[in-house]
Length: 102
Picture 1 (cartoon, rainbow, N blue to C red):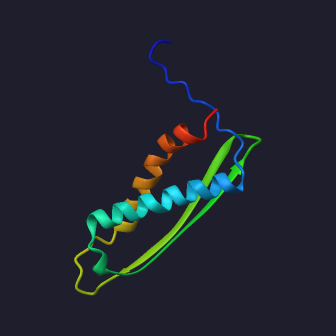
Picture 2 (cartoon, rainbow, N blue to C red):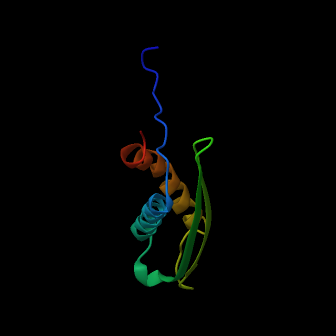
């Protein structure tokens, strides 16, 4: 049908590809947080992505674990980390289309 989107299959991803995807997500999370919070307000931030690829069913699985400690005087939204993660995951499909689709 006209107007239907064609979703291309992911190429077979190796460890290096998965590392690139993790780096992309990490960078996007930091960009988002830095756009909302001054860096001096961040005391500690821990971001982990566990990414796996099942070639048999062509599925990329991304699990996240994030936490952040902000300065006591900071007025940051406690949902900021979740928002940053959601934002990065929302940008992931376009990144995959550009770099990892056949």
